[in-house]
View 1 (cartoon, rainbow, N blue to C red):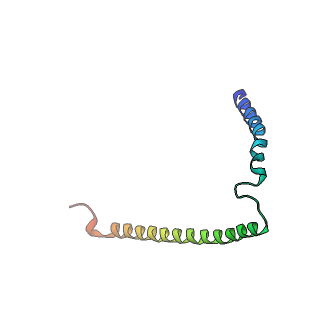
View 2 (cartoon, helix red, strand yellow):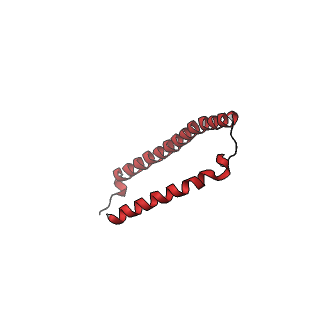
View 3 (cartoon, helix red, strand yellow):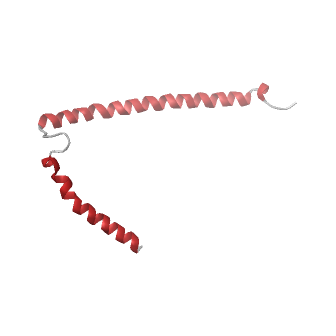
Amino acid sequence: MRRLLATFTSSILLLLALAPAALAENDGRGFYGATNDKVVTNAGFILIIFFPTFVFAMSMIQGRLDKRKQARKAAAKAHLGNAQWRGGW
């Protein structure tokens, strides 16, 4: 327990010591550069378009997979019900 506490404390202190240097890079503008209202609005529109498209695509994929699963279950049921496939003499 002491090692865990010591590791946790030293990790927090290290992160706190390095945070100002990380925030001071690039004058605080981030990776993109200076942002204005147009950039923020366009980013919002991209998010508005992305999430419904993502949900639609994932729903279509899930529907296709469920359809395959039901077909596989029906084939297995038909296979078990067929007398020709039963073993024995």
